[in-house]
Length: 275
Length: 274
Image (cartoon, rainbow over all chains, first blue to last red; front, top):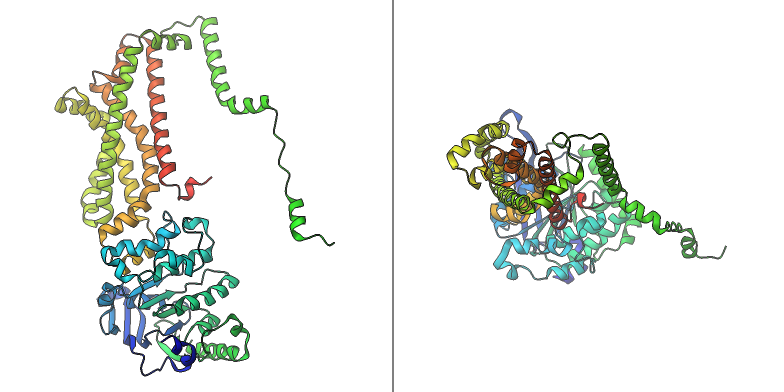
């Protein structure tokens, strides 16, 4: 499968032999109840294949975060209409099977736990069955995100980028099949963000997870994704899907190439048409 | 022109201030205590010069004389009051944390209990202390009950606040991991509540000492509070002064024990960093 990523990246999104892992059919998400109810997402159809990287891009308040929560089975079932299936089952079932990991905009670390203890938290929660779920030890994951030597540091002793690396390492602890990321680099400065883009792709290439990443950044979406889903303002729905055919592994230099800039323009135009 | 950035940086380092002479250092370290010593000396001098009678304002040496005359009596009182205060604080802490947890985690408990807890809070416990003595006798029990009642409310508030002020995303993270309510409480909510809890301990621990004194005042037969009542009855003002000082010292010690543990337990919290 690894070779497929390197050479066949161009048509991975629509690949016939990669099964659909995450499927949303006419999903509709309502916040609150009665008169105060707000439709956050309306008639949204989107699918993510196994081992695919999809970015959701759209204006603020188009219900992207809500959508991620619905997929993770965090919202009450009555607020979700339409069909969301993960691995053929309901989101809640997938959650019970530890299919998901979530990376928030803020690192959301426990400030009293060291880096190692934060990365280990999912193992502690899952308990006895943990060993079978984790293919890599917390120590290995910390190394993977480049934080060796900081195992015993507290989050308050780290920079913003380092904290987000801890959050990514923690997300990979239980080998999720779906990695949900809600503007994970939104709070970082531009240079750090660039570095994190490359690192995320590196780390992801060692996993078998599908990624659904919400972002405001056109460059981020074009650099990371196999496909970019462009959303309309609230109530959010998918207005366009743009294939990103650049081969992997993608290097930071890609961002300066003309073909890349053309792609970002294509996304920009689609965004403007959607709003 | 050719010097490296490193060299220039080294040169730009601000020179360390020269150490002041030793005498000045000693003075700086001890000046707080000097104030105390000087005021005691002034107090001693004035009472002697103005020949103020002992029952009105005893000189410091008379106050210390009380302790050296009958050390057994006063130290036994201190021992009893310390035990009662510590036990009362422990009970208040356990009851406060349990009740606070129930209130924070269950809206029904909050609705049913909170108003009545508030009534207990605003009730002058001193007023019901005699009643407790009637119910529970003259031993340590009524005193400990009075003291716990006075000390426990801040702990309830601290627990509720601490458990509720947790990052929503951290809770969502635990839900994604299918963590049970108990595991979330143990791994996230309780550690998160510790700084608030210790803030409430700082308030409650000295309150437990005051509560104990109040209890002893009303219905005790031992302890600093009881001795205070006796000394006042005999117009033994120097003993009163001594007992007040001992009570205050106990409060200070208890407070600092809490701070000592707080520094160790919640080292991660911003408040622990200077």
